[in-house]
Image 1 (cartoon, helix red, strand yellow):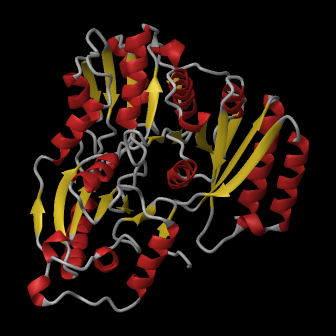
Image 2 (cartoon, rainbow, N blue to C red):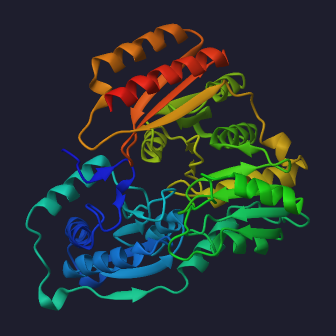
Length: 448
């Protein structure tokens, strides 16, 4: 079925502009309610809603609630919690559906709506397409006596905090470790510092003063320099930089150097394999992950399973193949032993566990392999344009692929959440790499 509203990570856009309007949120809520409503006792129809700290979250939360209750769903409002907490609480509270209101790492003027099924995993493409079909039609409301109720759940964050701590090795503590935690002024601004402090770390929090407008603004995983500066200023052993909804993480070592998701996954895959925990002896990652990661795994007798970009596709491959570790270079780390979606905090805790157990510094653990030189540039295009279909662009890309054959690769794709063409290439020769990327970018810009 065709998909127009949903991208690679739910519905997303600029707040108060289609599709991120109150009217559309109301219809999405009603459509989801109609899709998930089961037969039987009305009290069993339950949905949990979490959000990050954007101002528009209030508007979308109320509109979704109205739509859901109009179709007989009882709504449990969690307030600001990380995205993985919604996945966890959807299962824990036996809800029919979970919803997270967030645009992740995007700026404050954007927002989004992500849906989780009763198993805590994000919906399939087919389920999202069916909800779109319901949105476009006439949605039958519940009878007056069956309209749903809404209530606040005051301890949702606390439940997630307690669960997150159970993923850390039993009896292990973080005493003596100075840890900077950058919460991006987002959804984990209270949960993440609490978890680390309760495990014994000396916590230095930044990005923990949300005002509705400053989420991801100069802080968080897309701006790791803020965390790196704090690590150096405080002489910290480690920096943890989350994004606005805390489903991704970037690690900063004690020297202020940044380690992306590929290095974190390499560490975890090697450790889990040594411990006999890595199911299928494979790591699932996207086409964006560095060739160096693939070489690292191959050298240890492990495999790299690649998917399309988007943590939803990583999770689908993990579930289909029986794998328990995957993620993205951007910092989405999916550990299905612990969570149903990327969880930046729990991934960081796995890194901390490695530090505590081995006694190694963050700089040693965060440098698992030498990455092949990689360059990524984004080109914004106008609505309705399709620069990748231009003959000139296709010709330049073909020339680049031929030039890098055997020594690198080219990956060109449209963003699933923004009007951007992402131009990525890897090559052993950095001069050739720069020439290839710049040539493609110039052709795309001309066509856009």
